[in-house]
Image (tube, rainbow, N blue to C red; front, top):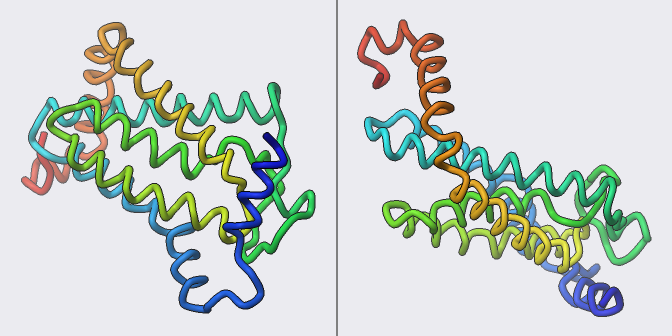
Amino acid sequence: MEALNQHLFLALNAQPHSQPLVIWFAIVMAKYAIFCLPMIMIKGWLGKSEERHKMMLTALLATVGALLINNLIGSMIWYHPRPFVMPLGHTLIAHDPTPSFPSNHMTIISTVAFSFILRPALRRMGVALAVLALPIAWSRIFLGVHFPLDMLGAVVVAGLASLMMLWLQPLYLEKLYGLTRGLYRLVFAPLIARGLLHR
C-alpha cells in the first residue's frame, strides 16, 4: 500500500517543467480556497432561519470532532511523515513537518460537505463543496505536502464525524444551540439593536 501511495504521489507531484499558471492555480487551491467555508458558515449563522443555524452548528462540531480524530491518529495511532520529510518529490510551498495522515485541509472541507449533503436543504451546497474538495486535494499533492492516501483517510474521517454528530444530535443540539445563540445575542447586542444583525 505504501509503495502504491508513493507511486501515485510521484505521478501527481509537480515537476521542474510544470507550467507557472498550473503552479499558481495549485497554490490558490491549496492555501486559499478553503476560506470559502467560514464565509458560508457565518452567512448561515447570521440568517433568520433557526433550522439553518442548527445545521451550521452541527457542521462546525463535526469538523472539530474530525480534526480531533486526525490529531489522535497522527500523534498516537499512526504517524506518517510528509513527502518532503522522507524526502520525496518536489515541494513548492512551505509547511511544518506535522503528520501527513490524514490531511486536515481535506478533512475540513469534506466534513462540511458531508454535513451539508446529509441535510436536504443544504445538499446542493454540500455537493458543490465536495466538487471543490477535488482540486484542493490535488493541489496539496501536486505541491508536495501530502500523499494521495492522506486525502482518502481524510474523507473517511470526515464521513464518520459527520454521521456521528448527526446521530448524536438529540443529545446535545437544543441545549448547545440555546447556549451559543444566547452568547451571540450578548456579544452582538449593539448591532442587533440597530437592526444590522438578526436575533
